[in-house]
Length: 454
Image 1 (cartoon, rainbow, N blue to C red):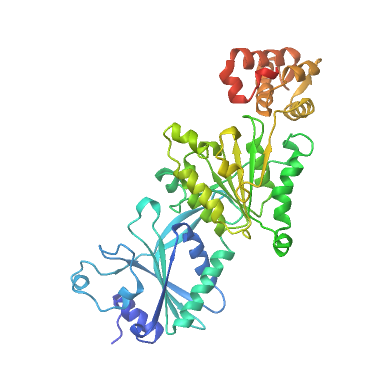
Image 2: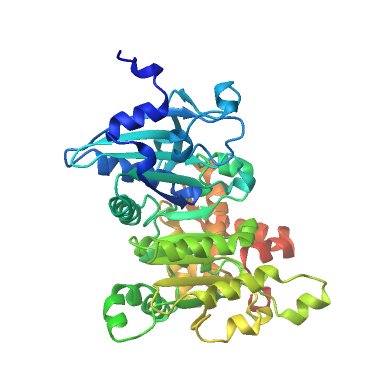
């Protein structure tokens, strides 16, 4: 008598598919980090949608004690008393999908858990399952592969892992690790956030002659010739420190480098994310060539004696140092650190080669750089300023951020007089007065204005 498919238990379904007693087959199990969920899904789709393969996915609902998902071994084992009483055994259910963020507004519906029956040149049974006890969003995914021969099962698992590495959805993207539940929910639960930074072109980087070229040599050029450097037994791992007063362009320079090295995965570590340095460096190793940007590194890397006097702990600092030391020299990972306070940096971080190889000061703009900044931020405005030289002199000691705000505020003063907005001397005077005198010391500090040079 033929039993309808839906009435067959999992053991019967698997046995008929493999045409073999499943207890005589081999099972290989691989654990994956939760953020690999979309990569696993895409790897399985690619494998079984070509080469004469076809696959059927069956939804599986685990029993109330299935904290690690339902493994294949449980599906083919004789039913327990609990399962026969309906208390704990796996049951057939709709296939469940999860919407995963892929960046650029894209989402991918990924199988959350399911039994794959694969037919083709060879027959396989796979079980994709998720750890149900998801502590701190670290729940793993497990993939079970069943085949009549262990070697064949291992070959399939290796093929899946190669596809995950080759077609990784995170490669070449700008990422950060989600820091709280709300942010993790916005990633589809993977814990990795995608970022879309505005592209920054080289003409937006206003620095003294030669400085941007030196920074590019350590970053862009070293990456461009990484294979040749590796053959010459030169290390690829490197660290770069950009330091200078607020508003001078450290972050903008980092954004330019991210825009210029599009093939390089970028991990951004800032704010509360400084507590996730280990996870960020782990992903940077996995997705090399990569760049880890740690902004305001002085927040965690102050000189140890200063932290001890202030009663501060240093676990984050130690983790940063360990991660930088732990990378092999032939791994193309670039650490880009920024700080406003190089004087308080931990000497072990700032002076030991292999952690930081080069430090560059991003200075306040000199006269020529201020002239270029005026030209840059005047774009889109009608400039009817008669004495531009006086304003260039009055802004000695001003940062690029201050000059940008100066032109924005001047445009606000000029806007009521008609469109297109035309800037005159009085508008720049009013804007400068409001920023320097009305705004006071806090505004000058926030925007980077060294009043000692004004």
